[in-house]
Image (spheres, rainbow, N blue to C red):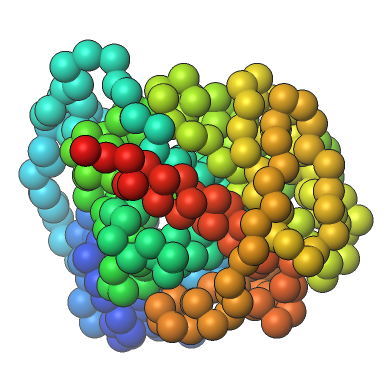
Length: 344
């Protein structure tokens, strides 16, 4: 069951569109999702959800403000009648691209690469590699609702947008806060191309993946159906595989069992990147492992001013994870380059 406390705001530490980070009077910290509850100021009395911190989950020690008791009401107009977070006390009318600019017919993604990630950190690596190799490519991030729902919560996405590494964002399902809102992931793929102008689509959940020791007990298995959806819509599906040499859990060594499960759920062929010079791994049929030369990932991330860690580890701590993820970006860049050369 959830846990709540009532306390007051002692300081606003930082803010950006959709998010404030604050200090609380009891010495703890919280985030404010301003699109849902409005902003706070010093001295405001707030109700705070403390559940995740009390459970020791990966929230970085931040509570979440549920409501600001210092105001009697708050309104912010939405852009349509499509609701997200439906039937919760925080349901909000975000509208959706599909109601504002419906597709004229069945989408056709025209062979564009669609890279599907199982971890949020992979989005930053893939996008940085694509932009490094193909600077003119327009990269659009589709954030699923497999983990954190507010896009504003992602420091990584804020960095990717600020540096031009990602050109636009689409939030799918109950995820919200992107440049475009979409009802589901297949539709978000269409929105990414048709409305956001994507040359390459990178798909992945926000921060906060849920994982267990079981093969199917992880939100990362969403990658399987997404690969199939991308294929059926005419994209070139690529899995950003997860492989590690630093993770202490054997199930994440070589090809992670989460990546294997996603591929086993995908019925249509997908490409899986493998970095030359790293150990080979097997992928289940009908998928194809493709070995590519990966540029120095740490240099690319530094050059683009995109700091990325995964499970607290950087490129020096787990080079195989970063190289394997980067291989998916190299494949996407190669496909984009091939498409660009054959355009009339």
